[in-house]
Image 1 (tube, helix red, strand yellow):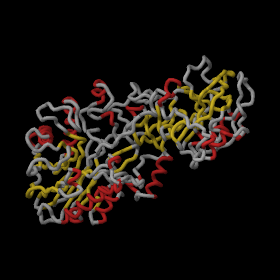
Image 2: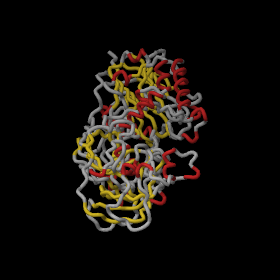
Image 3: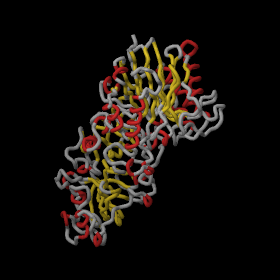
Image 4: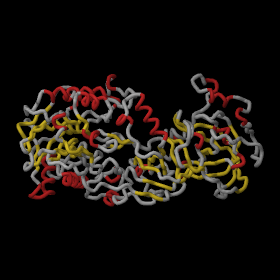
Length: 635
């Protein structure tokens, strides 16, 4: 499953008049019944906060001026919103071409000495600045506004009516940060100021790096999704708040998408330097601002150093006699099976893209060498020689050669399992395991409506029988189509949670009936449940008696997916007690979740040359999910 990614939409375009971020919150003095009391200060004819009135006429350097700290105030919004003010300060950073403005800051001896107020402010300026020194002292007349969507706005000066140079000043020293600013308003007190962070900081998200020139970092290491390790509701919200306090976007100070060069990286984004999650960066400098609802550092200098997180070149050692794996293969569609039929409905757009996708998926499966393999997101086009499952099986066997390439796939009577475009599938090595009887499909609601029925197949190896059940539950996407019972309740579980809970309950009841007539209680439920470790569907299955193998065998919180900088498990391995007693180890192979989407077989937004330069026929970013591996001790 691919969750929707954030984009630089209207907030990120270069055209300021159409940008919500560039559209100020205007003071509505006569109609401010629903506006915070701080907004009303802009209607006062006095001098709130010690901010003198600005009048018409020529600007006079050295005349009384508004202090930046008084304009910023100690709250989320300026106490003088809507007021026209005169400010005299030093230019700290210029982003006219990138952000449509520049930043100014108070000289050290002109600070208001209040640690709760910022001494910097953004000036929206749509013209070219007159020629002046880099760190010029200027005086300007402008109106105070809040840019963005409340309450996550940035105080700014807009509609500059006059600007003059008042001499040259010494460069402003940046604020040095070694940890997260103290208090709930710690970031707010540094808004629009130049900041230097020695680091190291941990990369926790790279999905916006190639597309928007943004890198998500944290002062506190990897962020885990709240409902991966905390119960939905208040506990999850508390963890989400903690995640937000320690994270920061490093931004390239540009608003365009798919930048040609990521100028701020000390090492380029390549297959050899992939900027994985857990990469460490040090020596960071820029101007702090609040944009698109996040705190971000608009970088003024390249990052000084990087320590790339290592890639796991081999699957984890399971110390078992048999391996069972589960893998979401990111919409594996093979066209018409004869080299045509592209673009496909959910997969590759061309034969060249499919060839790269196929090569990466087979590279991963060829190293895993699972004896039983459960797949998700494979095309639901039957089991003929030109089907997607036949194509993948044939490619895997050719990759492994005559000695180890003996995979076969489980077939379902009647053709397509379910009505969805994608389905689950099961492969097995004929020399290692023997399928016992036909597979079983769970065709009851709510699986019938979604069209992706779970598939169960019993196998036998060395006299031991066990049943593997492959699953792909309803995703968290498509919230606009959710009925009232499935709407996002704000507890961290997203929309369609009620349907996933019903799926978990129905699945458990079905497994209890021994649908394959195995006569054995050794059952392993695997697949993409689209629910994190502490969400209701997984908790229901665990409370029914199933063992969470990844949680039991992981040395740290497990994860198979990274979304918006938060790591968690959508992919699970849940075993009956009878099967759990045979498990030697369970683990994920982190070849995908930590990798940049720019390294996928057909990353969107890049030309063919860039795609080819980043592509390698290896397992890394073969999908957006990590495969899950379970080892069994049979002897």
